[in-house]
Image 1: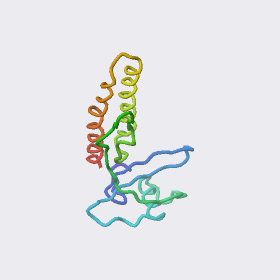
Image 2: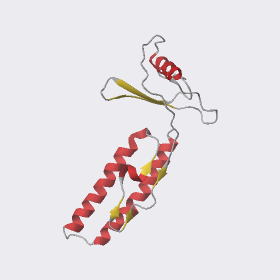
Image 3: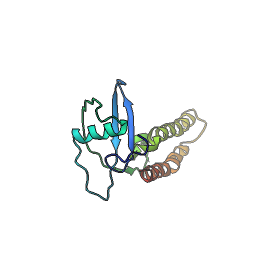
Image 4: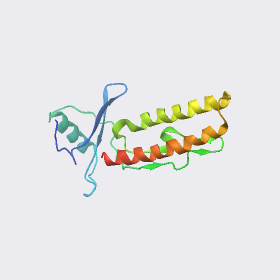
Length: 148
């Protein structure tokens, strides 16, 4: 139901999950209001309202609450130890930023390691990983939070 004002602020995520016959629904609520009571009855109502079928047969497997828990690493390298991907940024799952940024982190570090190990560049090149990628981690956390 596009534009449905369902169970909160009318914004959320609905996606199919493995084994491809189950659905995950992540639904927001107005943080300026008390948190809703989230139980199976609430989840069933949200799902039925979204689909537009008040009689839809739903088997709710699990209900839980989740709060935005965002952080990012300010240090991504300490000597020969590097941190990248989801270990360096935690944010709402909106915008698909986690996977994209993780792949970019891996690519950035991989080519630098290949050059250093192959003798094409000095070890100092690896210091640029921190300089280049730490601001990106901060940026995606900020952007993801603005999208909710």
